[in-house]
Image 1 (cartoon, one colour):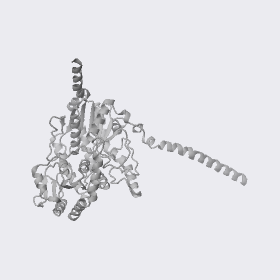
Image 2: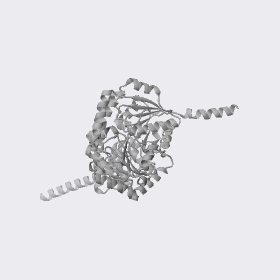
Image 3: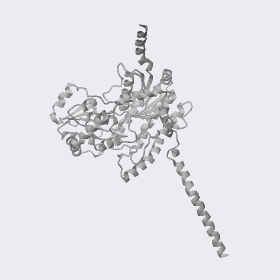
Image 4: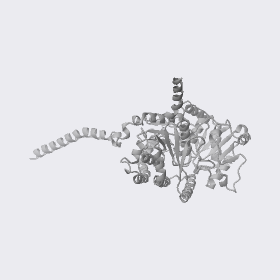
Length: 521
């Protein structure tokens, strides 16, 4: 009886004994929040005590609640003052207009990172919040690696951390991922992995510019680190904080990513938001049935872009949609629809749409998207071809990968006309090659041995149980760049080869000079 009781007690206590206190850090809203929410919930479901630090006040997803989930992880929220939030949201809306006009500039990105560094300075200066987080004594932190502030915060809390990067492998440059420029496109190059000589030259040029751009971005965060870390900014700067992560998880996998080498400390977990489709609400099903075999198209330009503020572009989009037989379900803020613009009968606007369930519907025939990583993986999962309309950031690279893989086609927003839009839509729907490629990519993505959400949990638990990820980090992480690329060896060999040649040449030159002088005498 005593042994049986002990065994039952041990089994009941096992999840508690193996659970960990985990902090997830989300300082940016939109799709970043959707990913961190999913990660936090999955870890909670796996028996861990999870709390998310969520910064409010960033531009919100229209029609979506940021309240977390019932019976799931805990949440602590932090926000700046109302005046700054209004100014920031106004600036962000103006940037959306610029993106729709094709003006995605590096200066705009620098302005964005300035806002992030300002927010970071205020967060780290909030003694009440920092003290609360320090008192919790978390076992590990999972942070959004897009925002450098997350690394500074984890360092200030003195907690081991896992870096979750919401994009592809060509984002971070400071973690020594093998990146031969001959076939791995540099961020923002808009190249595929098959480049001609001009493409490789462009890629090399971008690879030289990238460190300069990163340094400009990190300068403001370095100043924040010096103000708020007791020991000042780490000697290796933000590079050192990046390299200090126990593990790097990337929101990608090789169903969409170009094949390339990865390191032991990297894990690919793209597609965590993908799930089997649930039945739609009755009114949506009824609307879809109106279009019969023609089916319907899903349109969303991202979680943060809920309207088109450029009237000529909106007119062309609506006119293009009016020319096709399919129904068009568009996530669009009703309040911002121009009163003088009529909607065609096949166009329906919704403030928020269940994207996963819609793409999984048997009548879904095309997905028009901005090219966000989450959206593309949901299209892959449900085998729906895509029409990419990239607006900013990594979206241009993302749609290049999708197009190279045969998943769809791309139109730049500045080139959209009603004729081009309608003809491209019909090409994507009628050409069987796009559906076939989508089905092939879906099989690749779904047939992986471990689903992405579980894969991340297993790796986080491995880091917890093994006491860190030092066994995964190669020496290249701490090598100076000239050692990593063997430039010191090249210099040594050059001296070893050229040295004797120079000595021989000097000796022969001096000897000839002496012989000539002797003959003259």
